[in-house]
Structure formats: structure tokens, C-alpha cells
Length: 127
Image (cartoon, one colour):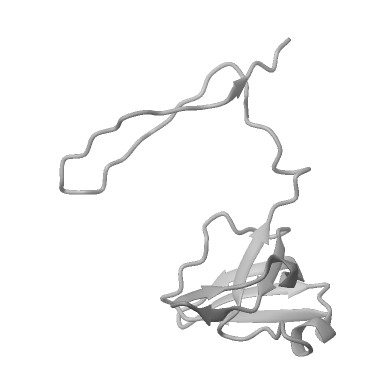
């Protein structure tokens, strides 16, 4: 089965979200002025099959979900739910491989900024 999640055009979708990721959600409730949720209430929604940015909406299509999990119990998927995703660690494992890396840093601000540190994890791949 497939479900289509539709977001307003002003909603920011995380740029790391990609086809093949696993989508999760949890129902939230307001406690003490904060939206909270119990980690035991997290529900697997399914695998992201398609992501599209249309003029009036942003669409994420998810497959292999359990329709019963969306509509029963305390974890009903609605506008107050918190959506999150996880990566497949087989495809997204490791760091840079190779002899060199090139990085371009761009400051889009009109203000002066300072760069304090840059770090990386590099593995030599030729030995």
C-alpha cells in the first residue's frame, strides 16, 4: 500500500530526505508548554518512494505502511504528529574515500562572519 503525505509549500523538508529512507512518526501532546512524545510510541510509517516539490504543495509518497497503525490507538497520524526519517546504513555508511577532497565554502550573508573550525573524517582507500 502507498500513502501520500502533502505539505504546504512553505514547509521545509529536510534536504537529507531521499528515496529509500524509512519514514517514522509519533503523535505529540502539549505538556508544560512543549510538544512531547514517548519514545515507545514511535511508529514506522514505511519506505519513501517519491519526493516532489510542486507549485502549491510538497509531496512525499511512502509505501509498505500498515493502515491499522495510522488510524487506531493513541498514535493517529495527524497534523500534530512529528515526522522523522532514518537512513539505510548499507548505502550511507562511511566517509570520504580517495586521494584528495575539495571543498567550497560560501557566505551568503552581507555581514562579516568568522570561520572557527572545519573538521573531516578521511579514510585512505588505496592500501
